[in-house]
Image (tube, rainbow, N blue to C red):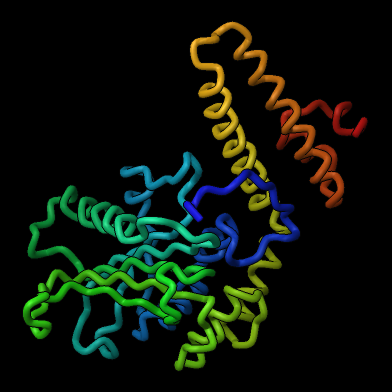
Length: 291
């Protein structure tokens, strides 16, 4: 697979933790995020902050859609983390499809984390320890490991560490049965199979269920999907009609209307209120009622 997906609208009541939008929403809940990071990093976290600068200043977006992953500053407990009382930076992303160049993707995210610190006036020596974490449903390296950890060491002498304090970890939910840690194994199983078998995963499952009925979440999800589809369709149509300016706008409007009607049909089948459908799709109440 080359990482490209055809557009598919998933009804709100079918969203699971590993879906892009749901993952981002749930991981922005501090208690859930703290539990997941403590489990995956095996450290005790004092508290978490969600900096706006990484997403807003640098515009971390993919395919013109809002950022899928979650960025935060993690304050590690000095008592547990062997004397460290530093602010670490984290970037966590969940991938539901196999992607190419995952190494270059981590390189980009690392650059964004470091640039944010340096733009605030920090010296190179003051750069904090950082982690880039991917949680993948499928094995990105096809080696059957439940986790792949990458740190920079000397090729000629493995005992020599570069000391840049960067850690890139890719978790492979497909190989959850191979994971020795019971907590991480239960979490990866939940990501892969959507079956909650631990206290943490049951808390996540409950949060997912709550989000499905949260009106603000539903509104944002519908707007996100419509924007995503609109951008994709505009790119496709402009590519096919390059140089044919006349009629392009009519074609785009017609395409948006057809997509809005299709989206409204799906939403209506899920039982969402007609007024909300009208507001989210831009269709008139009459159009929605006529479906």
